[in-house]
Amino acid sequence: MAPVSEAVADRRIKAAIIVDANTNKVLYTKQADVLRSPASLTKIMTLYVLFAYLRAGRLSLDSKLKVSKHAAGQSPTKLGLKPGSTILVKDAIKALVTKSANDAAAVIAENLGGTEANFARIMTQTAHNLGMRSTTFRNASGLPNSEQLTTARDMAILAIRVMRDYPKYYEVFETKYFTYKGRRFRNHNRLLFGYKGTDGIKTGYTRASGFNLTASVQRGNKHLIGVVLGGRTGAQRDAALRSLFDKNWSKASNKRSRTRSLIASLLAPPSPPMPSRKPAFALAGASPSPVRAPIEQGDVSGPGDTMRTSLSPNRPRPRDGRQSIYSGTYHVQVGAFTSAGDAQNRLGMVQQRASKLLQGRQPFTVSFMKGSTEWYRARFAGFSKSDARSTCEALKRMKLECIALSAE
Image (cartoon, rainbow, N blue to C red; front, side, top):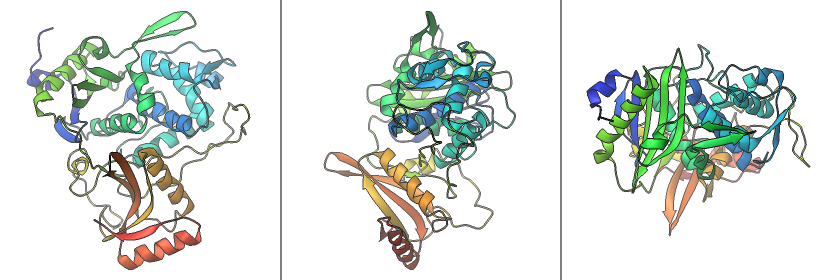
């Protein structure tokens, strides 16, 4: 196929962003912060939340999910699941990745959230915790809803987070074919079949959104993430993203940044929503009572870190007069872990337990190297020296270990 110039690629899409995944540096943008419909890119977040449940041991890949009448009644594309039947978690995951099955997405939502609406609230909160400040979800599939909105920048943040937080589960996005009950489905992401180094992740389309695509490409030590939204056709969308990748390979770094600071959001996130009724599935030997969604805190980064100056756009100050992300010269550290996910989960747990005490404080993790091991400190920012000490004393009275320390 003849190469497409960047100017032509730019005309074929409504919004785009190219990010160096090694450094979090943004290499190209077009309308990256303009709100648009995500369509089936929504399913990346559906899977991100599901992966949190898997890692927390709330269910396994072989758990059975029940199919409701609501889920079975979703519009195509879908597997054609029947009310009252079940589907294994591992099959539901691959159905979302390859077929982009709307019925399977609804099944996941209802089994984990009680209702799809509740699950969408969990998705939205998780998005905001990750720094996807412009994103709102109203369903788990990406089917048309005027209030379901995102940006190219937010989708790039999500792509990077699913890779870093769930590398074991992320590999499923490279699945080219999926066979279910004798039917073989081909992944809609055509870059997997013809663009060197592509390892995922997801396509999307509705009339309102146009043709969307988030893709990850690795060649040697270089790793780019690309998002295009609003393509005129699937072919033009794919050609545009290939062209943008081609134009930006020379700018990509061969080395991964050793220190990355990950900020949850400008404002402290609320406690996670509870499902309004029991999930439809019950694991063997486990209580069928509703469970909270494992909360992931995350990106965008701190002073001097690339994510803050690149993936995070310039934004106005909060209107309620709260402190900026790094106002205050002290932090409260609540743990250090060798897993980013464990550090983020610690932040979520502490914030749930002490939501009033930590109101207005900014949760984040910062990584550092100790020998050959990367560690992650779980911290809250925005304190004076006296505030940090008094807050830590209050946390200790709640049996929550912490330390007050000066910001580096």
